[in-house]
Amino acid sequence: MNYSSLGLKIGLEIHQQLASGSKLFCNCRVPFTTEDKQQDFPIAVRRKLRPVAGETGVTDISALYEFLRDRIFVYRINTDTSCLVETDEQPPKPVNRKALHTALQICKLLGCKVLDEIHFMRKTVIDGSAVSGFQRTAFVGMSGRIDTSFGNIVVKSVSLEEDSAVPLTALNGGTEYRLDRLGIPLVEIATSSDIKSPGHAKEVAEELGALLRSTDVVRGIGSIRQDINISIENGARIEIKGFQELDRIPDAIENEIKRQMSLLEIKKEILGRGAISFEPNARIVSHIFDGTKCLFVRKILERGGVVVAGKLPLFSGLLKIQCGDRSLGKDLSDHAVGYGIIHSDEELEKYALEEEFKALKDELGAKERDAIFIIAGSNPLNAASLVFERANHCLLGVPEETRVAEGTGSRYTRPLPGAGRMYPESDIPPIKIERKYLESVPTPKTLLQIRKELSSRMPEELASQIVRSRHFKNFESLSTDYDTVLVATIFTSYFKDLSRRKLEPEAISVGDIERMLSSVKDGTVPKDAVPQILEKLSSGENVVKVISSFAAVSDVDIRAAVKEAVAQNPGKKESVIMGLVMQKFRGRVSGEHAMEIVKDEMKS
Image (cartoon, rainbow, N blue to C red; front, side, top):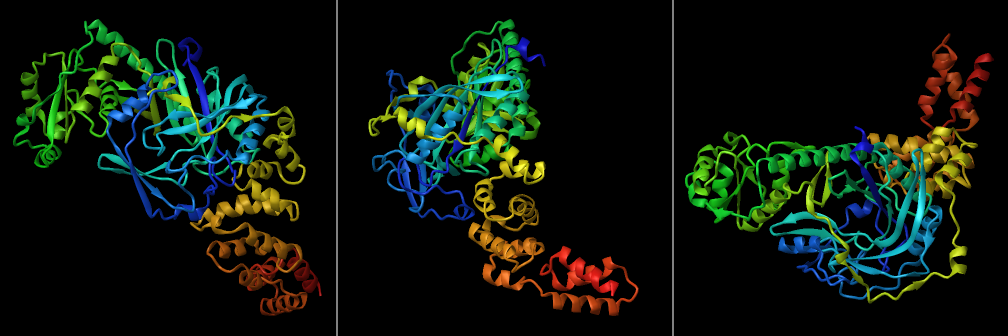
């Protein structure tokens, strides 16, 4: 594609959890260990959230949309990682100073102008991911930049905010969340829309990710998320949320470009047919489905549900047009939140609904070029109204939306929010950033600088792997006292091998690794035993017993074993004798030292 001629605009928002020890506005710890995945959440609270007007007096459209979905939210709690602040039963405590310190370091790395005073705002969020119905957020810096191979990209803002709750499962009429992640400090970095191509977007995300990992951030799956803002000429700004794998970014952008191009073609076609805006016309048509052969419709009717149907004037044949990774009909179905639609452009025989749709044409007065859709459920009239609203947008082209990454494409979640969702936070006083304090905040080395330094002490590829590893902080703390190459190899190759074999390297504590390295350093155990020791530690065995079982063998015992092997295998090569000796001692002997003794004994 010629991205320039398309008028392509791309911007990124990077959200990174900070390793601040505790949450942003309370003393609950930041959970990110293997044990937290098994955490029990014995306490539950229920909430129903409502929108409020923002600072401008306007109620945000996305908040209104979520409110009309009329959902109940259940929040699961463990008091080890959540408290009354998370449940909105207690005012926030003073802001986490370590998190603020890290946010300022990130601003310095990006060359941002830091604000003299930091004011927290409330951002209305009533999709259930915040118990209070809002997320606290504050601008910290602006007007920075990130260098790429395509030129400099402006960093519009760096913000400090709270992370959201994690959805557990869908409930009847709502969603269940857990609160261990809610309130973890996040830094949000928003770029300008000057990114030139899908590949460029991936490069910017990689550069920002590397820069963030130069500071005290949480590492691992789920700790960093990318959102993408995309538009083309005559299209609209679309926000696609939830990327954790950078390799998926280019495909998702390509898909969104194709989706918007298809929607513009659909607009041209539907206007060419003479279509004009139309009012919702859905009605209950359950009587047409008496004795239906469609199993899922029959079950809904037996449970007391209804079937509603609507007519989309002049839409016949358009609903099957592909818009990126999904058809227009599927996109309309995504808007019928909680229900989904079946429409006349589909293969109706697979639903056993051919006869019912023929009857619906007469019922709705549909003409040859009109499309028909149905929704079945307990109360689907509101969902039908949302389908009509989306269909009317086809006359305008591309509606502004928030979508979520899914496969190589995305699906609709809600309208794009605006400035109307922001209003002042009255529980947190402004934070003055004195020049003396800002100057005292050190600018950390970047991972590129660290990698260059490490490359003088280890192979360049190993240096590159360890600086990208989620265990880099542990590497830094251990490599000052122990063999740098060995420590790096443990957290890259050895851990990767254990994971590949379905073992649990994350279960090995840093303290156990340090005790093992100390034993290697003082000669208590040979370096060759490290992989086997790690294997046993990953299974939960006691570190003292494991290390003692790999205690180094004396030279006297090694020589005796060599003599025995030679006597039993006369005429064999050194390599054969060496293999027998190493097999007997199973990691308790250094290979290099054992070979010296084998050669010496075989000479004599």
